[in-house]
Length: 208
Image 1 (cartoon, rainbow, N blue to C red):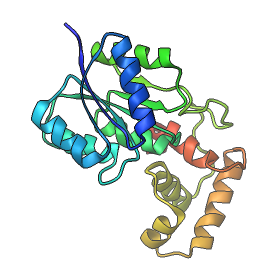
Image 2 (image 1 turned 180 degrees about the vertical axis):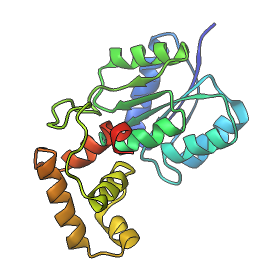
Image 3 (image 1 turned 45 degrees about the vertical axis):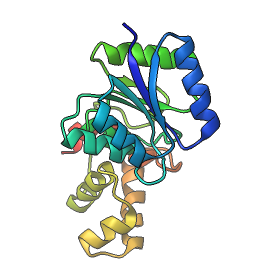
């Protein structure tokens, strides 16, 4: 029995190519949509085995569609496709029991591997999302962090921005940035963009 798959993406050429590839590999593409609202409507009515959704779509994002399906306990397994490699977005997807999360620069064979694992009730995470070359190691506990720095790194792990943290702690944004710089120095992280965010995401279990 062919596995029934629904696909949604706001780029017509990508959607057409994805449909053709899936059908060539013996999958039954039973529907497609150019935006999140139509995708949600179809999934709610049909409940296909699997839905492959673009994360960034007009109306509702793939993540918002997944959230609503999760709240309504719809059993359709969802794979998100995206250009975003930030781990905090993956953490949001993980909290919604997303079955697969892949960047759009995937190899076609990789998508088949992802579908195969998802069909076996396993999850698939594209290895490009969580870089391994961070200076902070998984088992290293943060040392010499002040109580405020610990609060800030927890907020960062939850995906909050400098502006968000500033509002919560009632301190200036430049003060938050100063704390971030101090944390990066204490953890001996690279100074490149998002290094602290990625470290915090990978090490949540030792900062809470």
